[in-house]
Amino acid sequence: MRVLYLRMDLTSTCRKVYGAARGFIDRMTEEMDETTNPARDADVTASEAVPAEDVAASALEPVAPGSDDVEPSVVTPIAVAPEDVSPPVVAPVAVAPVAFAPVVTAPELVPPSRRKQSAVDLISMWLGNLVVSLLTAAFVVIFLYQPVKVEGTSMLPGLEDQERIFVNRFVYRLEPISRGDVIVFRYPKDTSKSYIKRVIGVAGDRIHIVDGLVYVNGEALSEDYVPQQYADWRSVPELTVPQGAFFMMGDHRNMSSDSRDFGPVEQKFVVGKAVFGYWPFEKLGKVK
Figure 1: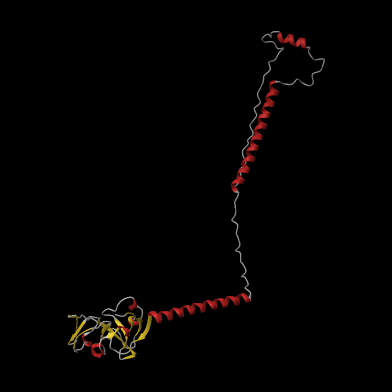
Figure 2: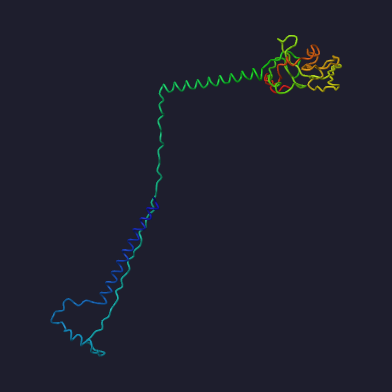
């Protein structure tokens, strides 16, 4: 808007200057005409009028120099001062910022029936999420992971008495049981009981124990998970692990009842692999 306003003032100013200049030129032209062609005096009477023939004859007669009868006419130009036409000064227009008041919208009133419906929808959503969570947990516990509690000290120092761990029940459907795995199995002589031991030999391995030192297929087994104070000096004659069975031993050798006592364990008694300890917190982590 400010630019448009300035353009309108300049147009009107130019028009005024043009009109003043045109008037000055017209006045100058009229004055020059009056000076060049002066009008006869109005008080000349008809008796004083000179006939046209005499005027013509006198005009043809030569005028002697020094004669006083005719005075030369002198044309003096009239100095006219030009009008000082200056364009008007247009003051800039200050545009003040417009302050807009914040618009406050009144809160929409929700009818009680709608509120009740919203609460019902919210509770239904919570219940649905709870059911889904319970079903997921049940699936994980039944088919994948099962929490168990360790009772006894036969797996010290790796697993302590009353420690809680998760057992993966599904892993051995995807991979075979390997040496060094810590597994949970049902006691072959009483399936109502479950034991947790470490796999020492798999099917086809030759196991021989001499003064507590375990040999597998003729080579001494390196067992860094058995501290010196937990070792024993028992010996077991060499045996071959049958197909579909495993030789189990506890890490706390002098306090463990294992395959040295009840022989190899068949795979049908295996429950799963101990994978993760969750209680107490200082034992939180992977079972080794």
